[in-house]
Length: 278
Image (tube, rainbow, N blue to C red; front, side, top):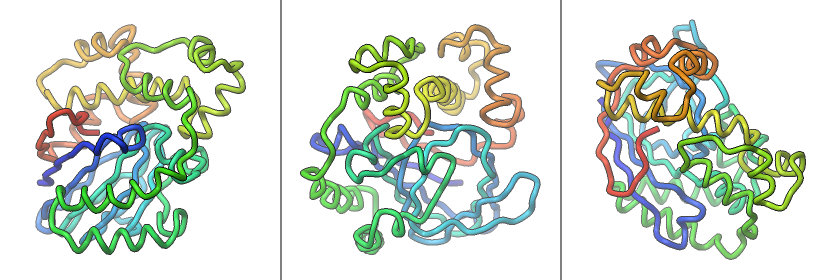
């Protein structure tokens, strides 16, 4: 069993960081393997102990992830994750354009990827990794990470309406017309789509689709007894069959098969005001 806890960032970092997360537990005697589906998240992961394996679907073993990983948004079924050992991971989850604004990262270059963050973002991140290893828990690691990130605010790119639109999409239950979103940014549709994809990693329409799908995953994880028909209705799907179609395209399985494979791998410890688990 893996226990997951979350904490919100301080006010100055809120436009850039969604939350900090701690995952820990021992799976040495009961390895966990579960599929990764499409997700809108962008985050940097710091492994404190054993690293998880990235396993291609249908294969027994895989390759160990780097100990410091930049993970971009996922657009469809990915490899399985195999967690086997003493698991302790601290993660910084960014707002949709937070990483690109703070560090000049073009997210579209990292969609469907998980790369060594030290190589991509610089030696300072390896120093941060060492500092995080030196403290024991989420509260202390949050303080260390916030100190690191606050020093970079002055160099952050200026706010652009595209960033605000992406945050709005993340928080809405229903899709918005792309032309309306572009108009809010005073951009033509093609220019809006190019700028959105560079900062967020995917096109606006695909981002909306993945966000809606991820709400179903969160809702079912939080309340396993809720029916998929109810979740489809609450999250804006036309009907249950449209939800099933999205599961097959974005997760690689029908809804019941996906959750049967994922199982009850994690125990969530909610933090007031924090978003539901991914």
